[in-house]
Image (cartoon, rainbow, N blue to C red):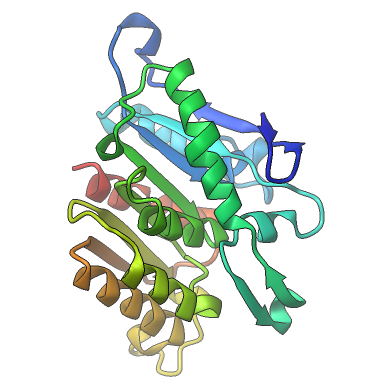
Length: 250
């Protein structure tokens, strides 16, 4: 599909319920970032997927998944999947994200196309967004800044630390409806632990707790999960799928 912010094509990885072609039912939709990492190991960047298809096949609830593949050249993923500008040596200096353009394209182009092509429930209550790492940051921004479109978000191992001021500003200033649900998480193996006996003292934990507090003050229902032994990888994120899907779609 043409991704107009970059004037390049981006792949879509779409999951339909097993009974999709046997009924006239409509279905809720959840949009994921890094769609190539969702379903099959052979498609995944590092050879391990989330195994999302296996979970959905046995979940007992029917849903459509739309996974947006990232750009794979240079820093395309970082730029397109970051809604803010921030600085740091780890990022090679200044990273000028165009993630808001990505989200605007999803809302104005991708979602209408999906709603036209498939039997969806198009209203916000039946529309979610999810991702990990930079994709988790995008999911958070999507649910906060585009809340008239996305009512729920799974923000897994989100890269919130480099841009806390921007994240907090958006949470405080955006119009957020009180039925919004947001899942936040981090793993102990991806956080520097000043006190190994208390992972909630890490900077990653403190930042996620701060985001959760800001969201709660805006009336958002949240679930913050500290995954003991969890790393910044698909194998760890796969284990969180039942938790965040049940929380968001209960």
